[in-house]
Amino acid sequence: MADDFLKLPESLIHHILSFLPFKEIGRTCVLSKYWNDIWCIYPNLNFCLLDNETDEYLYQYLDNQVENPEHPLLDRVENSLGKCLARRRFIKEVCIELRTRLEVKTLTPKLDRWLGLALDKNVSKLVLNIVNTRWLVLTPPVTYSVPEQVFVARTLEVLDLSGCTIEENCFVRIELPNLEKLSLSLCRFIGDNLLQKIVCAFPKMKHLSISQCKGEGRSLSVSCKSQLTCFFLKSSNEFERVEINVPSLHTFSFGSENAACAIDVTGCTNLRELYLDGVIGMDLERFWSIFISIPVLKVNARYLPSMYKISSQSLKRLILNGWDYFPGVEIDAPNLLSFEFSLTHNLSSEFNFCFWSIPKVDDINMMFSAYSFRKACRAGLEDFILKLHNYEDANWIIFDPNYGGFIMIEKWQAVSFSSLKRFAGKSRSIRILISLKTETSMVCGLLESYSIVKTTIYFIRSSPKFAESFYKKLGNCTAVNDNYCCELLVSPSKVKQLATPAWVSFMESNSRGVSSSNFAFFMDDDNGGNSFYDDLEFACKM
Image (tube, rainbow, N blue to C red; front, side, top):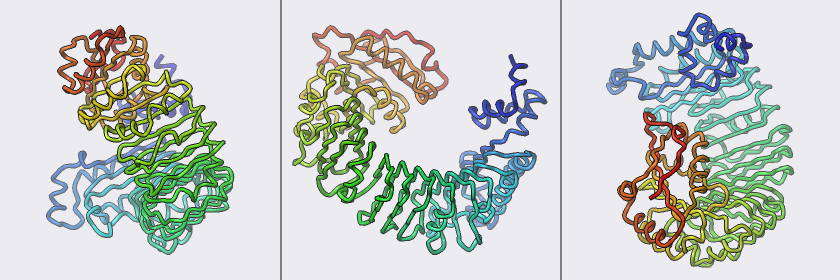
């Protein structure tokens, strides 16, 4: 079989190797002369130097304020990467990620050399991500200035720059005729309306992302981009006006803490997805003409001044989350199929869930904090759930970020709202979720969002079929299967030992006198243990 693999076309072998971590690909060079030859022409390079890969001896120079500190480690890095770049006849992708305390004048000549070697080999994708812990404390920060050669690389199709400076006086022209995707994050622009000039320079642009940059200017106008389909803009509050006139645009995402920023997307006649991310105090009524025509809308706001209305025959998916204060929203979306709602802080006393008319919704996910859940109950949450056409299939998910545990309840009617409110009063750190269809993805998302190391998932008033189905679906989640091992719990005493007293009390009070079984399993990110799927037997009668 190994001989058959080596008979594959070179391009196919490279494609298969691309699914491996870059370090593992490099290690194949010791297998044989043939594998060494494969490594020497592998066209994708991913170079990463982080603080934990450097030594304190190097930083002793910095702490003593020695200019241009040199150290064999940096020379070895420069020599190794330089050789990788120089001996390849063709390079397709280069990713350079640096997290270091070295001064910019020390790094600049080496970065210039690396980028020059890559661009001379007709690279099509270039990613440069620089985080300098020394620069972060400087005002303004001193960052690496991108050389002109990057902006005249005719073969570049993807350019991703983070933590860099782009100076107008460093280049005389921008000539990237084949660039399709541009991402600029935490960059600094030096020059009048430089960002505007950069955005307007690429005729084949399809995907544009600008996030938390400095020196953006007060206005941005994007037009005449016949191929632009996705535009993600997260402003650092400098913009006073943003005008997008791109009929081909399919997805637009905007985030800003400047409530006064004027946004005009009326020229985006084919817009299908609108994401308002991290907005504060913005009057959403200005988007009324857009709301009525798009199929997908997401509003992630920290604060909104007043109740607003979403009325649309076209809306298919709606996401509302991230509220510090939720004044309420009226929803009239007769064709809505998927709805996500998150409320973790305060809820206006004037709001009631009867303001929501979404009769066809088939997939729903709602998350509340302990405090907001009690407020939501007073605002008619239970009556709203009962109006859903498939409410009987809804599940409860209870999660405590501090404890890291989950409680799964197969049928939402199996536990009363009053019981949950009492539980929320005793465990004020919990999150209470209502889910239709996607409970597995919600658990996976919470594990990732809160960086949970160990967790116990309990099933109460749930059938063995539901618990086993959930267990297998969770095992199919790549993030879970790669990072956790599973220990099936068979001892009630062990379950009580892991759980908090409030959880034990809630589970016991909701397990008496019922015929359904209770189950639990324990997940640990200790990769030295068994993998998630080493044991598929799911039998944990408590």
